[in-house]
Image (cartoon, rainbow, N blue to C red):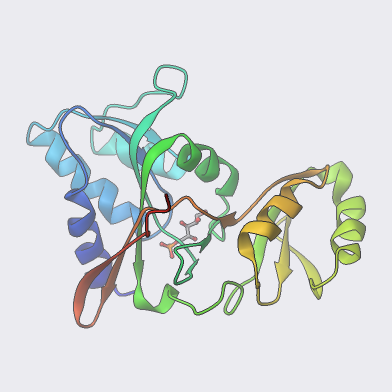
Length: 217
Ligand code: A5P
């Protein structure tokens, strides 16, 4: 995404932030401009506290003077703004190519509302189309997890990169796969984020548009 589009998405995401909120700060090159602009608002008088999803986002927030808090002090976050690597029409996500997936998932699941900022290139018809699903595995368990992943089928290949494992291939039922992966002892978590995003802000050549999750009764 061009820097200009990232700025547009960041500006649009600021509409989600209100005085007094506890805000989760995502990780990556789309979340970063949001953090900078949020910092500008804080310097202009907005009172919020924030929980970063990575050390990189923590440093940026500190540089911008955003007051930080912890999940201990605030186990419930009002809104988290984060990026994503792929977004399906149902607002299911692949995240974590930036390497912060476990912390991002903890923060997302502790949030009343999750807002995702992306450019149009991240929209896919089916998750797994462009990227693999990163999964974090306890190092001692890598071989066992590899064996189990192969055994559950439909997952054609694994590869190790930067100490992470990727499961590749198009995914028919992401929510089921997310549960299945989580059920393997040794898997810390996966980059599948299903039923989490409430709003996706998409920046593109035609401007900014919003995709909201359909409410289920
Ligand atoms: C970080 O671990 C990821 O989940 C990012 O949110 C994701 O990779 C998107 O990053 P960009 O906004 O830099 O594309």
